[in-house]
Image (cartoon, rainbow, N blue to C red; front, side, top):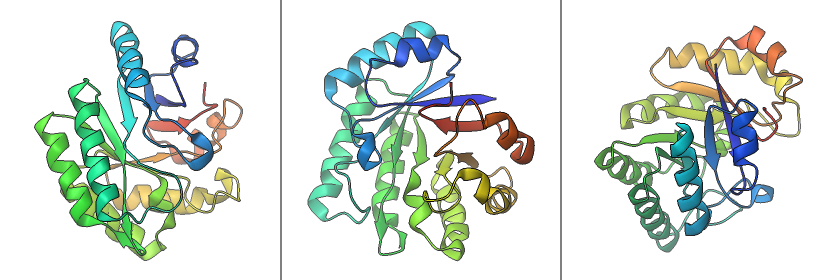
Length: 210
């Protein structure tokens, strides 16, 4: 089982690796759902994690708020993504919407960039802003683009993740190993075992998961 620790900066990374984190999602500004961390934080986090053999996925998101970006913001994220990958990150955590549908032009641009660096792609919790029908379509589209995984709470963050197990199970079945459905949001050391007993997936995400 892979436990992805969501790190807001470098500070907690050494301790969380010692406690069992097997992958790091590196971001800033968790109060806004995560944004791109600074150059220095990325560089030093990658250097440390590489010595421990721990992969790092870095958030490429230029601001908090909604996931509908203008052309300037899209170019900023593409420029940030290139720097992140040039620094040696194992992959990008990214997303974008147009209304309540995927921003396929932005995502295809990010996908091409990631493939150039042989990096992975995680679609973040913008996924949870889609309707259920659009989520199923998004699974098809993201798998086709070459995304490795989708991070999702399975529903509104106002409810605990255990309330969304039924829909998460349907997403996992629909994805059918074409793309990983990675549950996240409110997963802790205390509820992980119960959640895993019901979902039986290989990857989980959280800031309190270890």
